[in-house]
Length: 229
Image 1 (cartoon, rainbow, N blue to C red):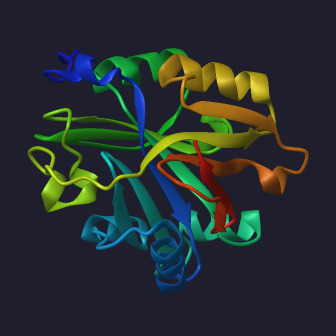
Image 2 (image 1 turned 180 degrees about the vertical axis):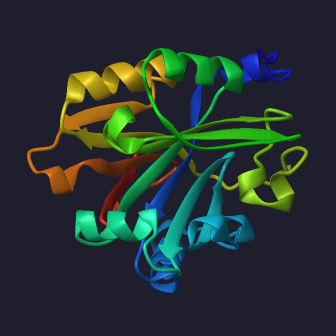
């Protein structure tokens, strides 16, 4: 088992670090994000090409809003778009202090891993959405803990001094079985930043709201409500 990342305890881990939306039209989604949330200069990660995607990652304080869009046939994101009937909340990424410990705990809970990666500066793990309940989730351990490779060079090896005024404070997730999903997420991640609602229709399962510190007015983007925290 690996040692926790140095200084990780100062960040009150685990914590929600990034939320991803999925959109059929990446440019249109980015235009809405920039117009409605005032975010700028996203990082486009070539690494998501592994999943048949293009993306844009926006900084929000030391948290991040990502939008992904399929650029290949038969992708997980493309199937998710079809299942949800359009643009939607897609994925929640949590920062944990010790990826090995979180992986061990996920295995104890019978949760399947669909992707994992270990690099010198970050380790990431995606869980099967049917096992986690509610949405696709990832847990990641960046080194140093204030860094976040998925946001690009500005966040590799550390954190920049100039941060956007807003930040992601929490999410609302609809699940078919609220109690089961809440139990898994709280066990592995956090119950401080995630609230669950019951999904009456299977098409409604997923991230339905993002709560933003520093946001004055609510708006809808990619089928997700962005509202003041």
